[in-house]
Every structure is written in structure tokens, then in C-alpha cells.
Length: 318
Length: 263
Image (cartoon, rainbow over all chains, first blue to last red; front, side, top):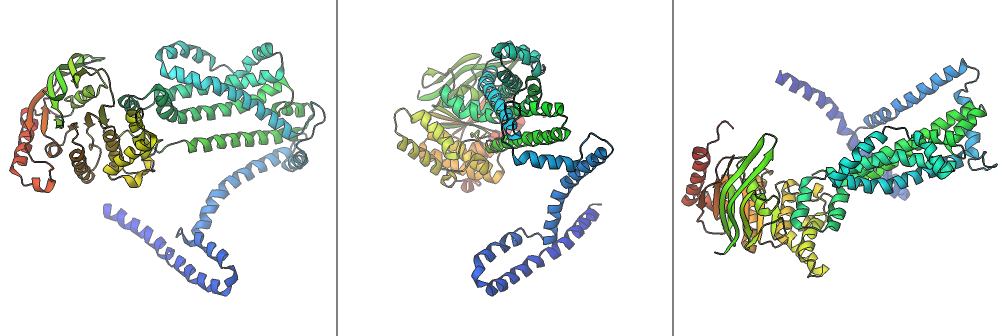
């Protein structure tokens, strides 16, 4: 049984390994010949073959890798667009991909026009939504992260605030919108207020969890060194809580971007959510489809941006 | 009389869900200046508990612990600890890890240049100068422990406490770090208390080996004096009759007198 699997494994490796070797050799022989032919362009010639020869994988395999990376997502999009086209064909008021694409081209050819408060380019709509998210989210971070530290560090505060948070957290942030309207007496800060509410919970909870999970080893180091409270915070607590904090931030920016669309539909003004509703009233369904794509892409970009930041601050585990 | 650490009738009990668990009972021990003492015993015998008590990370439930005549009320830099899992802060470079300790101990009276010099010297002592700017995750386990040792020695503690410092390392790395430690102890004349479960390590490194009985309510069973000249060389000791004698005595204690019933 054992020998059988071993030989079969060897058999599988050998044929692949054999052609893999001659290929780079042949290429490296070919390169100098080319170089002597075109002596003037040597620097470029030198640079070009290096990445091909270096990984030691045959050309065919690399093309295969590229295909495996590109083909499935491409097929996915093609399938969805095809399905969409089919549905659109059998319906009179549902625009197909071609019509939507044309609309998008005209829409994005002038994204920053202004024809009064209720008719502005899609660029302005996206930017004002992002601005609301940024403000609500920023204030939530300013309040939520210190609160998370307090809850995580002091068991008393934890037991005091935990039940309140548990009750408030499952509430849809839109339920807070009327309170915002009442307090701020304006639509714009009210929708920012809902963003604040929905962003603050993940930030508090994740920061608190991070503080509670600071490894005892690091705290022991701090105790043995008898570090000052300031040093404990800057050198031990903050860096070890940071990954948790960033997870909280990432979760809350996801929800914030979900909520802003709904909040703006209710409050009006300039913003991508309001724009969707406005285009529905204008019966421009293709614009709604464009908005769906735009909201999705912006959300994805926000998420990726935060992932990038999180990766920058993740330390190799020991 | 010149004992740095005095442990007098110390007992340690933990409150657990199943009731009171007595880990240590009636422990008496004096550690003299410049002495290297090993604590050895089966796992669960409370040797790490005793070390944590000396470190001040936990406080005893009965008895008195003194360090230089003062009661141990908590951890402090004069009792540096080398942790088993090195406990380097992963977001600081090797240099910064050591510097954090140096700054804490000497920062009040010395300038930055002098502090950096101390840090560099500590790293050189454990032959890690090449890794000064590396992050802990970029170096091997043995190297991390070297940095941990450098951090502890850089604080110039009155006493150095090591909790199974080489327990997580492979045998070859462990041997080279033991040799390293012999060199560093020789140079600094440090007072060291070390927890180990490696009989050879205990004999090789220590002046006295404190053998602990099995828990619960563990205490010191026997104390063995290792009368071998220092610095010691592991190759020469392999055929030394006194080395073999010490080894035999510890093995006899661990596997005859304190045989663990069904591990």
C-alpha cells in the first residue's frame, strides 16, 4: 500500500519535472544570441527575459495559471450579464445590458454637473454619501474606540454597559433616524447620525475584545519591567489591540455603506441613496442598475482599502 | 547571611472551582549572591509557581518572601524574568525589545546614546548583533530566546529568573544556548534561578539543584550541591565522575523517591 502510493507519486512528479528543466535552458541560450543581434536595446532585452526564466515554470503552465485566475470570474460575470439580457428581452420596462451600458457612458461622461440641489452628477452623489459615511464613521471611531478600551480594561464598566449594548446593537440604525431628525432638525446630519449609530457597535465590541485578549505574556513583561501606564498603553495595549480595532472598523464601514443608501432614501438631498430613489421616481431603471453596480464597487474598494491597512499592521505571530 | 532572596515558610494555594488547591507548602530557600540555582521536579510540582512568587507575579498565601531584605510585593526590574516562550513584543524590532527594558531601568539617569550602547552590548553578548533591526517573527525560536536573555541581562538585575528558558527549543539549539548562557553568566557573575525539567541542564548550569516533591502541597525535597569547577565544558563533563554522581542523585530522586503514579 505504502510503496504503491510512493511510486505513483514519483511517477506523477517525474514526467512533469523532466520537460520543466530543458525549457529554461533553451531560453537562456536563446537570449544572448538575440542580444548580440540588437546590441542597442540590451537593457530592455536584459530586463525582459529575466522574469520568464526565473520562476522555473514552463510557459504553458504560467498561461494555465493566468487562465485559472481570470476565466472563472469572467465566466461568472458573463453568466450574470447573459441572464440579465434574457430577462430584459422578455420584459418591456426592464433595460438590458446594452441599454444600461449606453446610459452609464452618458452618465459618467459628465459626473460632476450641478443643475440645482436635486439634479447633480453621479460623482457628487457618491462623494456626498462618502462624506456622510466618513463623518459618522469618524465620530463613531472617536467615541467607540476609547469606550472599547474602557470596557475592555475595567470589568465593572463591562458589566455596566454590556446589557445596554446588547439591547441596542440589534436595532436597525434606521430606527434612530427620527431621533436624529428631531435632535438635529435637518436631514443631512440625521443620516450621518444613523451612520454613527451603526458604526459604533462593532468598534466598541471589537476594541473591547482586543483589550481583553492582550496576551498575558505581554502584560507580564510590562509588569516585570514595571512600565509606566503611558508605556503600557503605547507599547503594549495599542499595538496588540490594533488588529482587533481594524476588524471592528472594517465591519462597521461595511454596515455604514449599507445603511447610508437606505438612510438617504428616507432623508433626500444629495447622495447615492437619494439618487436611486429619485431615478425610480423618474422611472429610469437603467440608472438604478448602474447605481447598484456603483454602490457595490465603492463598497468593495472601501473594504479592500481597510484590508490593506489591516495587513500593514498585522504582525507575524511568534 | 548574604542571601539575595529569602523564602521563608512560603505556602501558595489557589482557589479553584473544585475548592482550595494547595500548590506549595512550607518552602524554605535562600539564594546567595552570584549563585545559580535550578528548580527541578515533575510537571505540576509547583516549580514555576515558586519562580513566579520570587518574580512577584503572584503573591504567596502564607509565609514571607524577601529580596535584599525587602518584602517582595510585586514584580520589578531588579528581578528580571526570561519567559519560556520568550515573550518578545512582535511589533518591536529586536533592538527595540531590549531597548524598552534598558530605557525603563537606566532611562532616568543615563542619556540616549548610553542606553543605545547598553542595548547593543547586550545584543552582542548573545551574538545577535546581526539581527538588531529584525522583527521577532523574522528570526528562529533559538534566536528569539537569545534576545529574551539579552533583554533580561541588559537590565542588570539583582537576580535573573528563568522559567524553562530552553524548554521550547530542539536539543541542539538548546545545547548551544546553554553554552551561551554559561558564557554570559561567567562574564556577569549573575545570580540566577532557573526552572528546568532537564537533569543534564540542571547539573551543567547550576551550583545547587533544588529538587521538589510532587504536588499537591509540594515542597523542597532535597538540595544537591554541584561541586564542579566553572566555567564548565559539556564535553569534558561527559566523563567526569562527580557529574555522573550528581546526575545519578537527581535521577534517583525523580524516578525512585518521587515516582509519579501513572503520569
